[in-house]
Length: 158
Image 1 (cartoon, rainbow, N blue to C red):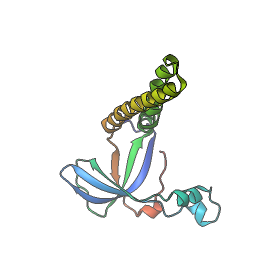
Image 2 (cartoon, rainbow, N blue to C red):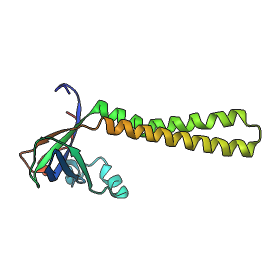
Image 3 (cartoon, helix red, strand yellow):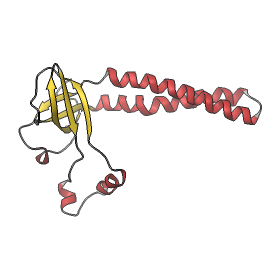
Image 4 (cartoon, rainbow, N blue to C red):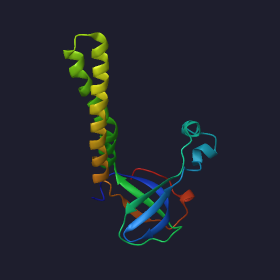
């Protein structure tokens, strides 16, 4: 990964580290400076509606980090784009491509609809399975220790 590549960063807390693995907890941000001043963009309202929870994940990582240490995790934006296409685009394309043959070739409307739906669901499931492989294949984020508390840092694209 070149230093000139755009990277999306997110702050996380180290829960466990050792044996080439690290367990991280990503928490919902408390609030941003604009929200604290009452000039927020409205994202906080949507965040409260959908109730994001803390997420814990295990990642491969060579050096040991200490429990309780804060790190920033970076993923290249190109990898994020590929992941979005794999997770959302492949199943959608699979559904459409699976539904079309039955829609074109079956004469009876009730059977045409049922077979189109089944074909779309089957191909969407297969595409979703392939998309999961792509997501796991490219999962190697950059992890960097932080020297400050997470409230002083912001998630950003660098």
